[in-house]
Length: 124
Image 1 (tube, helix red, strand yellow):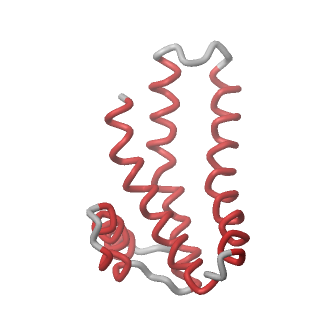
Image 2: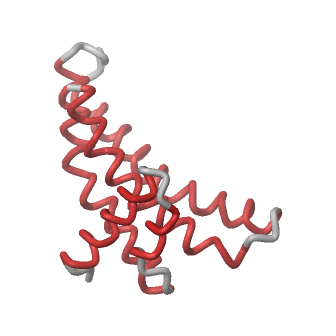
C-alpha cells in the first residue's frame, strides 16, 4: 500500500521535473517496490478519468449508450497504464538503458497523475 507521504513526495518530484528541474527525480522511490506502488497513480487518476468521460458524454462526444462508452474507455484506460510500460521494456533494451527503466516508469506514472490534474479543468 502506498502512503500519503510517498504519493505527495512523488507528485512534488513530478512537479519539479515539469519545471525542468532534474533534481525532481530524487523525490521518487525507484526501488522495485516503488515501481509497483507508482501504479497507484492509476487509482488516483481514475476519478478524474471518469469525470472526463462524463464531461465528454454530456458534450455529445458519443452517440453510444453510456454503459458501452464507459466499458470501452475503461478498457483503454487500463491498456494505457499497462501497455506503455511493457513497450518501454523493449525500448529500454533496444537503447541499452535497462538500468534507467524503473526510474523512467516511476517518473512517468507520477507525471500522468499531475498531467491529469491539470488537463481535466481545461477540458471541462
